[in-house]
Length: 495
Image (cartoon, rainbow, N blue to C red; front, side, top):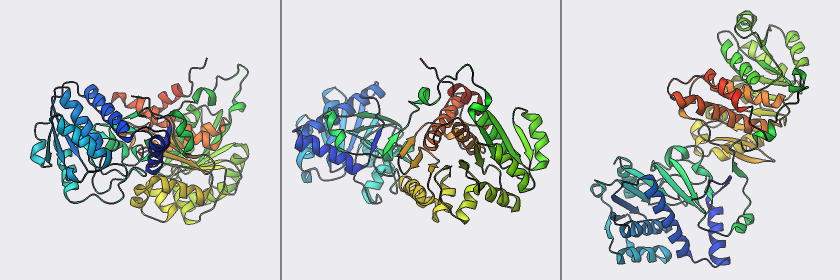
């Protein structure tokens, strides 16, 4: 089993890699299928070493063929195995037919699928639907997926959980929720965003010994990001450093009743290493907030002349946390938009942008699916149905860098493609988390990272800090709980 690569592929690209390996490099298709089944069986043994009863549910294509190989190997290892089929085995073709015949010859029972035959299984192997799924799952296929998910047994998905769309990570009506997914040749991008993380459980990868040089034949614009370049982006500071070397973040927001949002963004920027951090907020909030966090500079702003003074001193502006959409917030938003400073836009700044769209290169937009839907004039469900297309469209319409938040957050820039970040956890689905992310990205921008670097690194740091904070439990996690861990993460150990 190999470490997960960074490159992500669409299903058609993986099929092309498969074709090159078979047709141009002369690796028999059945050899690849046998390697896939063997890798899956090893994964099963390692995850469920005490398993004795295994049920393999096979569909009609090569995904089913992989399942037949797993069944044969499990039988040969002395496990009690049965294969349940959702299509007539006599209609199989090519390598899948060979795998089925070899499995039957080995003495494995092959029977039509029936839900009651799942009873007593320690592990169920999902080899039903592969990466070519393009329509909603229905009929006996839907019934089988529902029955498998309802058993309470361990579930191993081969290549992709059945019902999950490989390119966009959407559930096509219903999908397997696996404990473990092993995928082959190339990582499918839909495994890592949208509903993919929910359905896949732990993801393993095996390249099936495909020649390493075939990957250069396929251009992929989507990559996972795991913070691998943090020491380079955030090096040790010189001993002569002073606050003026590390930028000045101005947070604009905190209308009446929402002072906390602006403060959380500002404190995150400071904890991330910004040299100076100011907050333009309502005058009634300024004194109390300054007393609570004196390292931040709070300024009550009730007219645009006061904001102009603050903008003249800033190097980066984060606008939106607690901004509101009343007259005060609208005026501040427009005044900020008229400046040429780098911007990080969140919350109501995005909602105001949706009302009067403009395009610029030096900003980072950080919408959740609802805000993205308003920016794209569609529904949240449509955004979530294909997050990769949605984030690409946001960049085309608004320029700069866009972060589409959610499980498997996506970071996109036209020149760089799409980054996928899987740090983070469900405990972070609480108020204020987006404000903290806004501050992190602004703080990184202030320290000289490009918008692409700041957005991608900021999403990773935000999620990783959340993961560290959640070690004490996900439920009850608060946004400010991330800050101590954030400070640790932005000081990576350097040689």
